[in-house]
Image 1 (cartoon, rainbow, N blue to C red):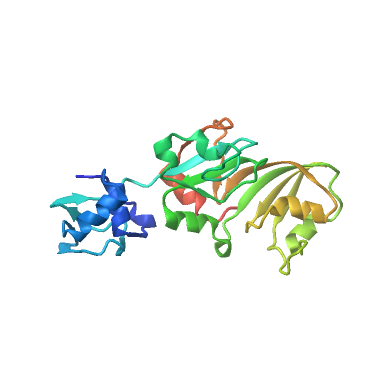
Image 2 (image 1 turned 90 degrees about the horizontal axis):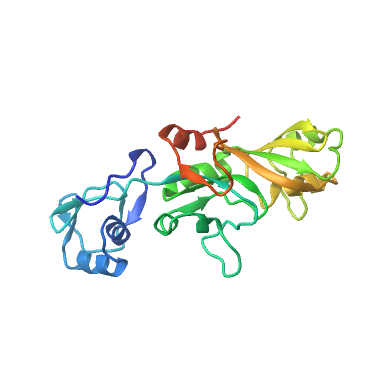
Amino acid sequence: CYGYAMNAKFNSRIRLDHLLSQATDLSRKQAKIEIRKKRVSLQGEVVRDPSLLVDSNASIEWQGELIGLPAPLYLMMHKPAGLVCARSDRTQATVMDLLPQDVAERVHIVGRLDKDTTGLLLLTDDGVWSHRVSAPRLGCSKGYIADLAEDLVAGAEQHFAEGMLLRNEQKMTRPAQLERLTSRQVRVVLHEGRYHQVRRMFAALGNRVTALHRQSVGGLELDAQLQPGQWRELSEAEIAAAAAPGN
């Protein structure tokens, strides 16, 4: 039997030829040929359309043998500064360079971090889970520690809580939590992920972020044992925590 069943909790739909190539050693082109030659069946019925969208945990047979996708990957990485969050870049190193090639080819980044931002980065090959974690309308929280160039002004907490109108935008930010740790270090919790949002919010208050570290996503905290550049798989409890509303 090829592969393993997809986690039904985050089941999604996928093209039949893509599923066949992922679950076997066939290339995408070879998978299309196999399907068109009537060698693939879905739920006991022969299918000939490679573009057919099927449930990722559907019962698929190839040449009479049951196949399925490998179990999905859910990764936590401690992103170091200086790496861009991209699959590839012609001029800069990316976070994918920290992963083995076979893993990097499977996963995508869930909620990118700026090149100079450090901390919790999630990667997966589960599109449904990725959407639950990163979709703005679902409001999954992201927690950051920010170092500031100047002392935090009085009343900054209220500005964050009420929402702010950022430069070149027409919609107020969602209410966010701001906690003073010292006069120049704060904890920020956002429930959306606009472009450079933390940095822009402090810029709107006349300040500048000198260092930014993401500490949490939803109810998931960065593993304190992970050094910058290290990564590991998530546990079942962590997978659920990341997709749940945070504090």
